[in-house]
Length: 428
Length: 124
Ligand SMILES: Cc1cc2nc3c(=O)[nH]c(=O)nc-3n(C[C@H](O)[C@H](O)[C@H](O)COP(=O)(O)OP(=O)(O)OC[C@H]3O[C@@H](n4cnc5c(N)ncnc54)[C@H](O)[C@@H]3O)c2cc1C
Ligand code: SF4
Image (cartoon, rainbow over all chains, first blue to last red; front, top):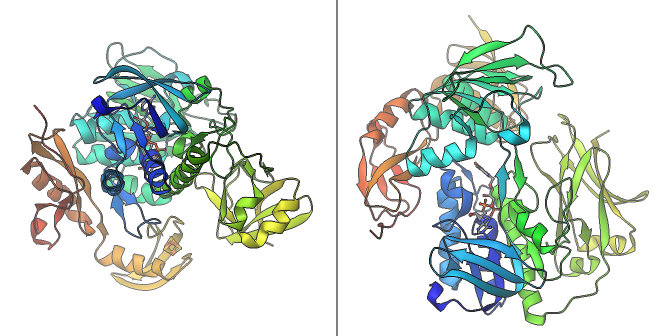
């Protein structure tokens, strides 16, 4: 397809995961004449292709799908509406004036220009270097996602006896998956005093197979010269210091790290997009436009979502706006109202809202709470002392995204607001 | 004799911790559930626990050596490893279609195992 590659497109989407797919499809449906999707992988679909377990799409399709099935529905739609794509092609650079530098196994090095650009590069996993694990550097230390790709796509199980550091969903799901493949998972260690993934995954991935979870524990040291031979686990105190005397040597040949995801924004930075130090993703408005006019962002590149359904929705908004931008190429001088994180909120996305949007569509504010709250909570949007809207949730946890939607009825209040501060507080 | 056990309900992301009192498989009382599906979950766990199972099977001539597959319905938990063994012996040929039956009526449970995605033939 790249023989027919043009030099200019209405919309160029970088990354063909669920965020990029939704953006591309929606851009085309909203009238973009031509849309090009670029991905370094050999296939469309992004990280979902290696997430072979079910649990996807309950919000979007009211069906419980596997990752590959969820992706395939969107791949099918993308092909049906006529999205052009270039695979096995790495985007090296994006410039502030929308030039995209790409090198592909087919087509070689090219520069393509998009009237609008959608950044949809997803996220990457924190690695050993980022969590500073002491000890030698033998083979056998991998991120859980890398191991997931090997086991589920390439058919290669990277060890026999595993210890997993981190109780996030990817780590727990890999514990079950490795058990299915005949490996033994000796232990899952979690430095926090609570599980960081969903408790249903604790039941169906760990408890079901008698895999032991230790909270407030970490890897103190890796043992082994050429290959991991064991790890030394230890309990930690409130300050994350290991407690002397609590050490235990656990023999294993592989250590998997499931210690968090970070939005992938090297390209965004090169393009000059302003990043939020808290989310690690771009500052965006309610249409997911970044600080650079005509450059949009969709999916995990903005902030790490826990449900792919929300990634799809965000991608749809970004794609529609990108198409609108491409068609008038105008920088709308809109007045926007900033959002702000109030009590028990770590961050809010989007970072600013154009009130006029509320005359035609709803705007979802998405956030993460700082502290878990296991009783009913109120999610409230305030401008100073004035309550604009609120809703009740049964609980709020740092691992699960919280949202509240601004609607047409809120238009007047939002238009007059100085800031839209969101807080999550215990319901009286 | 009745016993009281703690169970975590996996029916929805809330994950309530349930205190279930039962005598054999007769549920006498459930506490801690935020909705009535919690009690149904306890009943199912005591009599016939089931889980969705997702794994891979070998593919001949596909773009990847494996194709992801899943059970069309939750599968009896005590027989999961037996199912995995059966699937290790299955080998299908590319091209594969999403939804294609990979193993019919697995272990006589009446549950089919289906392909999760299309898998085209490799170009080579
Ligand atoms: C290992 C792992 C496991 C996960 N498991 C789950 C799960 O079980 N359930 C769940 O709901 N969520 C899971 N997630 C979160 C998951 O990422 C999101 O649900 C969803 O896939 C995000 O979609 P996306 O389009 O933003 O990113 P992705 O699906 O990650 O897609 C990004 C795409 O961009 C491409 N790309 C990046 N940089 C470049 C470049 N420079 N040039 C060309 N292409 C580029 C990548 O190749 C990739 O295909 C997981 C994430 C990871 C990292
Ligand atoms: S009891 Fe109801 S609310 Fe609680 S986890 Fe089960 S289904 Fe969810």
